Every structure is written in structure tokens, then in C-alpha cells.
Length: 170
Image 1 (cartoon, rainbow, N blue to C red):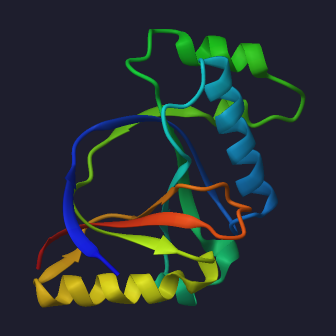
Image 2 (cartoon, rainbow, N blue to C red; image 1 turned 90 degrees about the vertical axis):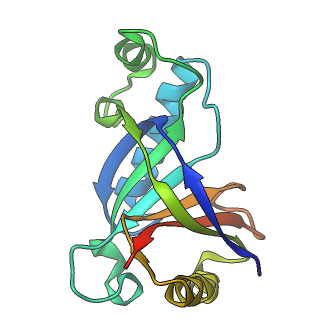
């Protein structure tokens, strides 16, 4: 497995923030809202992404999934015109939809440790362990939420996911 250092500059995305298990009702509603609003703006410029963290002293994979926090994101296609988000929300709004939770955010991760995970999400811990060992060998420490880029649909039987961890010198 190839683990490497990469640097990422500013990225502008549509984003929804929430808490709960992947695949849970809030998570699914947030994904639907993101894709609906992105569709109202001409479509996303890239795949679904997620920033994940816990507000608990335990390692993230030891925390109950219902307590996981996340920002789900879809890269925006180019610069967004003023009012574009509001217009797209109005275009796709339906009763009970979460489109009003969609925001435009710009973030910069900087230096990251990154690896491509091939296989089920339940086996990501293997790739994450390799990333942790890579960080330890280089004196790097976590510097932001765990980042996932979903290269295949979430229900794909053979998912491919880029795992990314912002880091800094320890």
C-alpha cells in the first residue's frame, strides 16, 4: 500500500455538517441535500467527501458511530456567483428536505498523509494503521479531521476511498 505526503491548498465546496452513523437518517438526508443543491447549480465538480471527527478522548474507531461528527462536502464547479446557493436551494426545495443546511465553505488542509483504501469501510483500520506508522516514522502528528474522498458510490460492493489526514511536525 502506497502512503504518501501531499499538500492541498484552498478548496471551495458545498457542505453539510452533522452527527451520527454513516448511513443513518441524518447522514443520508445530508447527502441527498448536497446532491440536490449541486444539481441545481449544474452538478458537482468532484466526488463526495467527508471530514470525520469525534469529541471524545477515545480513538475515533472506538467511539460509538452515533457520536461521530462530520462535514460532508461536494467540490463546487468553479467560482460561485453571488446568490447561486440560494437560487439552487429554492429550485430543489421539497418538504422535509435538508437543503437549508447546505453551506458554501472554503478550507485548506495543507500537508497531509494520504493513501488509497481498496475495500469495505469496515477494513479502513488497516490502511489507517499504515498511515499512522508512516506519520510516526516522520515525526508527524494529526492536524485536523480525518478526510475521506469517495471515488465510488457509497453502496459499491468494492469501494475505493482516498484516506487523508492533515498533519504537522510533532
